[in-house]
Length: 299
Image 1: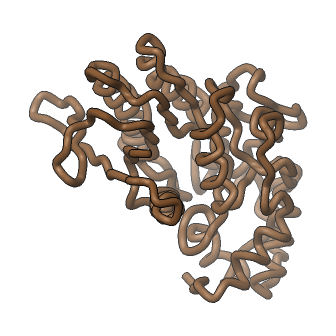
Image 2 (image 1 turned 180 degrees about the vertical axis):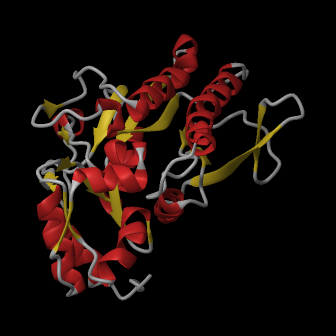
């Protein structure tokens, strides 16, 4: 199987490439650049054309940062996801033989702040900046539908893994003892171990029944206060800080409401219904595997 991957050098992409290499699949990385006219141009890392791939997985996008989002940052978040995905999907759709499977990254930010509501792939989109971005992001992936491709919008939760992702952003704060409850701490966090996310993407490639939106999250979302408590236990640090919502909004602006205070209790209904089994369905098991690994390094 020949697989085309954008974002292959990123946190998720590196693990995915390593996984596929172990399965002896041919992986070709895909990068992009802006043309003089402002359009996005795609090219493979080895100079080959985009023809004759069995699958394409699109991961590339502007990272979300745990800092105040300027107007420029929000524009980068939107353009990298929406225009990047749309331009790639259109480029693949124009090929003589488009890839039969196209998996495009999305996120559980699609659901917005839904408090206690239990959310699956049938749930309506939410409100807010990230919900708007995710809706447009997913729409941009559908150009290949008309060419008969099986397209999947993979809605990632908070990804937990070695030396990158969410833990890379949080680790330093928790090491300093600044971890704790954000606002009430009752907001739900839908998360997934990197190992399970990579396995889920492989499962989607091999499962012809899976198409459209697919939630890639652990079956067991946790409250933010529980997440904080578990993480500080593994880091052997206190978690006595309680940061009120008003202070988070004052410090971080819109990012606070979109990432730190939003609640999304998401379930992986399609994955579980298709027979996928999580290696780390529980947060404690996932964190133990990460922090006990010989490859773990302090940030």
